[in-house]
Length: 188
Image (cartoon, one colour):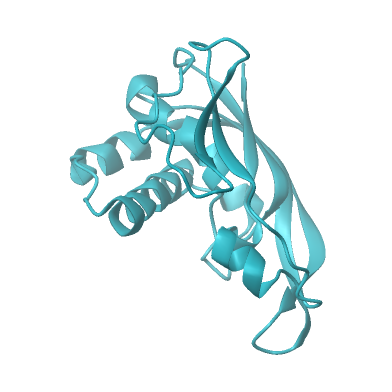
C-alpha cells in the first residue's frame, strides 16, 4: 500500500502515505492491535483470526456495488446460485494462492456438487450503469452491472459460510479489483 500511495491513485495520481496497519481486536484494550507503523517496524506479525458468526440456514446477499458476472449473456432471472457460490470460492482461492503462496485445501468437486443443490428463494436484481476510469485507455469507461438482492439457502451452510463471509471484503465478478461486486450478507 505504501508503494501504491507513492505512485498515486486515480487519473490525477493523488499521492498517499501509509501511516499504520492495525487489526481490530476484541482481545486487547482499546480494540486495536498495531501491526505496522510509519517507521516500518513490525510490531506483531501474527494476525489473530477474526471471529466469525455462526452459519445461517438462509441468506440474503445484497450487492452494494454493481456485480459484473463473467457470463456476457447474464440475465438475473436465470441466475445459478452455484455459479455465484463458486465465484466467491474461486476469488478466495486465487487470492490465497497469489498472496499467501499456498493453494486452498478443499475438495472442489464436492463443493461444486453441494453448490448445485443450493436453492434460490428470491432474486431482485436490476441493471445498473456506471463508469470507472481506465488507465490503459486513458478515459472513463462505461460498465453495466447488477444491483439488488439474492435470497438463497445453501445446501450445506457450514461449508459455504467462511467463503461467503470473507467474500464481503474481497468482492466478486469482473472488475472486483476496482470495487465492483461488493456485497453484504444479511441473515434471513
